[in-house]
Length: 441
Ligand SMILES: Cc1ncc(COP(=O)(O)O)c(C=O)c1O
Image (cartoon, rainbow, N blue to C red):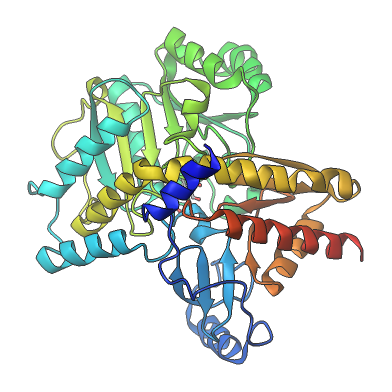
């Protein structure tokens, strides 16, 4: 995309920082500030200690790609609430859609009644789906719920029981999805036994050799496998971009054995990688695609989009009281419109800018920075160790830049897709200074 085209997108009001005075970084206290320290003490008395807080920030307000904390410090947000706020914080069109729908109907269960906006969103999701085929859609409230729905649908539709996932994959924290997750052993610790009937192989073409030679040959016949569930780009596992042959070959294996190919695009979908779906970078069409995080710009929702002929399950087989809540659906419809009006193109352009700015870090700090990779605005910087990655994460926070670790030794960058050229440049500069400071110690 040319610079002129990007300016057009900005002036069309799609890429906006709605409050131009809301710039970042803008630090007015030590970090954490006094109100943040007091709030963290309060929080730690009442909330579940299982919550994996990354660093001591207490966000209270957001605009565009900027987050303000409880003390009035402003941070450049390269996290987007873990790859969620694709339209940025408080995009006026998303806020207006939410307010309008909330004033008309806050909730009515779409499981038992014909909620109009539920079907409208389902039709939109078929239109943008990565498979050129009629689909039907089930809406839940989160990523993990639609992973569960996919496991159930795959078993129901195929009459087979086994599911295959990939090492490094992350799919959620409820029992089916956590059993499928294989990014860190701590997600399984003390919770066993996991759901039976799940096998894992390495991510990438070598894993498919293992699938065919070891799993299908020695452990379970291919014709008893219901589905293979894959993140086209692994997110939580450390922004792992597969080799070019992997996804096309995976499609061929699934076709050969009648196995459903389920793309978990909870993190990589909704324009984040510069295409609506990450799997489109490889020209592969899945049988089922799962989306959540970015779908409604931060309102809770998840969607399972399946080829129509797979939706054989009968009334009552699956449902949800809240799934497809009308306010979340309204936010999703506004989000899809904004993505198509320019945010996906902006993700591609800003992603190229980020990769160009960050790649020199490998040569500049050969002992510390191992790799810079990703697509669009899903970017990973791999370090020599998890200790270095954690130090960079913390130091970036202290300089007013929010990033998050992923995998064993990676910093993940997943800013809102509204991020501007100038914000991208400024975040990358702060990150480079942070890495230099950590590497120099
Ligand atoms: C690829 C993927 N699938 C599923 C999930 C689970 O989503 P949620 O946290 O909304 O349950 C995540 C969350 O990080 C994810 O990255």
